[in-house]
Image (cartoon, rainbow, N blue to C red):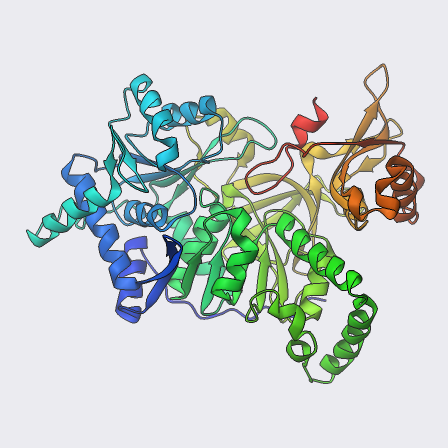
Length: 559
């Protein structure tokens, strides 16, 4: 049975602006952000940051962008991206984050659909934005986030304008904010299972995610802000939660820089998705194996776990060399976005870096549940937020069905899509599309409803379950399990399509398909016959993915 949940005491907030004002009152000039400028690390105090957001808001309001304008932003993770984000959240306008890696047509469609008036973007996106702006009557201003560009205004120019206005007592921006239940943030889903939809999040949704998220999750002092900022997992749970906790946020400018920045900034906690957790895990495992230390570490884990049972925790001492590879101060990895393999979370926790698995979805701002350090179930995604109710719809004989939630973090609906909203929001219950069960106060995920395979013999198969076994094979980079259909369209067998690291395979990848097929059979030997793989397909190229490294399953299966 799950332990009783211990909730943290959290300072309540009525608006995002109030959150920032409270942060300034507590932190003053204490460092809120660390980021690189021309290769050198720069520290920014809380008050300096907040002033900058106010100046930007002043300038936009003075130019006529106020009273509910949509402010879009597309660019790499950067300090100025966050300035734009908080400036919008603290004022009367609405924020529209856009994935910078979207195809031009998709980005144009979002700008059109969202009716955005202003677009902030990186210099390399400016030519595209200027072209798009000519086609979009609603785009009135293009702002460059990282320099001066012809045809645009620089964010620094706007901030200078706003600073002068502040000195003159200008208050058009600071005197107005968005109503609690009004649209505050319009987030377009990544499109892993279909066309992107505009998720409408209110200020109430956002402040509830911050408040209740901190009630269940403890984060301390300094984080590395890793994931792309257009995703709510990072922009809300990573950035806003850290600000309200008055922690220092170190900005990771690109996914390629993650490991180097962990060493540079020495974070105490990070938020990641399973793809990063798997990368960290396999790097450590491969390094230990190469040095012939894997057996020793596994033995020391057993010794350490025995000592922990009697109240002696020596993990940070026993596994210092491994922890030093993560900056030396990392104590917590919160993994969400999708389920992660239990053995990955267990390994990191065993060596002194607690990995707590959570579950969220953009439509829930995005947090639904998370494990706590004192009750960390590696097979579960933890306890739901105290503001939520949960029910399992259409459960089978094992208690598995569609996860539905109701409460303060559930979205207003899909922008301009009343029919799609009605499909997923029924009597206040949001139907997540994820399958799982709710047992002893913990939520368990078994797969996606859209991914469920129903064989012609009536057996239900969650491909994610089988993929987890296959990912345990050391040389597997990525894998997707899907059904094989007969001439009548019935699902009769299973296929595994995979990308392998052939250099890590026995004999350098010679006879890769035969070796992989044998290893898959061994990995699945405990599963029932109907869950066995009948066909193997090896890829030579990466799977199509979102910017958080989720495989676009529909593109793979529908190819």
